[in-house]
Length: 201
Image (cartoon, rainbow, N blue to C red; front, side, top):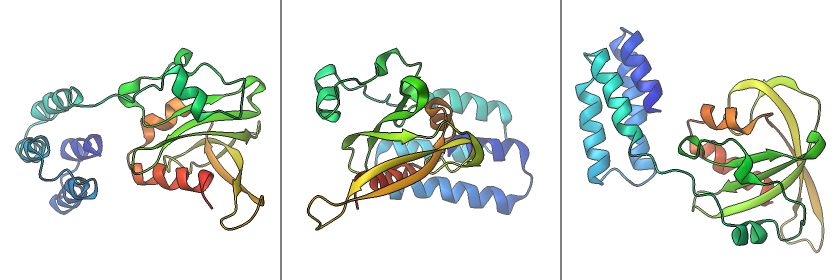
């Protein structure tokens, strides 16, 4: 969202558009319960000060990147708990993820017919999910990052609430490459909604 705001500062002259995007950005502090932290207050103040200078905007962006907390790669033991029903799980650590730009992990299985995901929910709990991943690639909207691009159908079986042993199949179109998806993901609420859709019913 900060990237979007700075881009608007640098390329849009309409003050109403700038104000709208700025208010949406600041609203994230309330959404994630961090609006009273010193870091967020300094961020809001700094954003207000960059509106008149492209150079300040670039410098500001470099500065806030140092505040980013990287995605915590699960240990081997944790991986075993996330995928306890499966013995052959890809080596996530060998994947080329920039953990500073990662909100979830996704690796395509051998033959690309399966996809392995490590997803967080809104409480920060991690889930390991394996789904069928259609080899056909289409141009469409990703259910995770809500960006148009190369997507494939990801299907999982989710246990029905209150039913004994009954499952329902869920299908979502998601980015073929999770690295690109992470770079395009700007609203974590979309990720949390996707997590709920593939682990709950």
